[in-house]
Length: 66
Image (cartoon, rainbow, N blue to C red):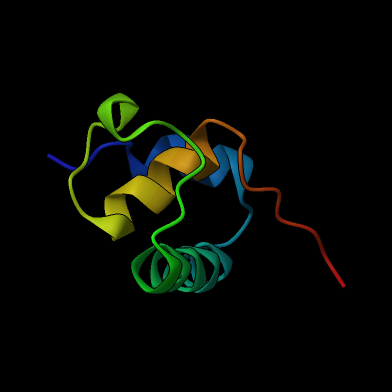
């Protein structure tokens, strides 16, 4: 099962496509720079993609319109 669920995330982000774009960019940053916004022991997921989803759910990533 995926954590966090897509239903929770779509309450925060209004589009699946925007969510995919933001999560993709953030997971690449995590992989390239090894920078996380929470302690590694606080994440449920082990991979960067899941960790980026967790950051969106916890409000650590703000998504704005241009």
